[in-house]
Length: 132
Image 1 (cartoon, helix red, strand yellow):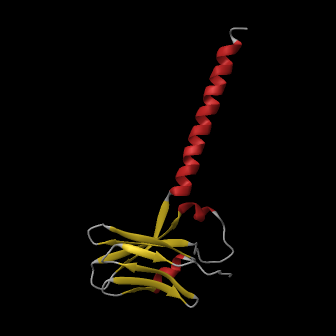
Image 2: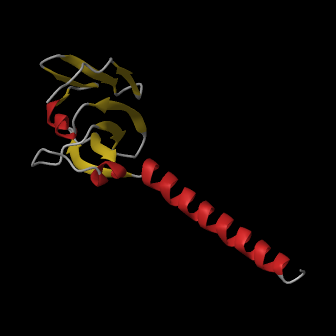
Image 3: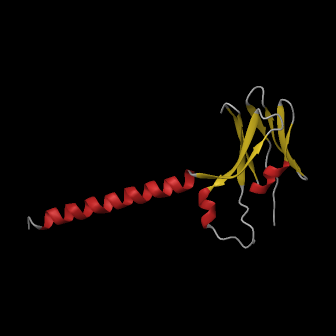
């Protein structure tokens, strides 16, 4: 009877260890991001990273081109964060328009986000519904 207890404890220990490792892997997969494209401002003072969540690569799409929903994050040349805004598709990063102290992304359905680069802030507008 005493021999059964250590085996039971060992089994519980390994079950718990496997659950912790799997939980950590799943959490890492859902928080990790991949860069789709880097866009530099015309004056070189800022750059934007068009990113998406890495786990979206795992979902098969019916479209021939991989184009997941994502977000744009803008930084100064020195690495100061200016804000992040969601975009319906990663290729929408091409619609980013730079101005002296602002950056804006919009599409045919309206404005998606407006950055005030001098203040390092972003105003995010509601995403319109997209169907493809």
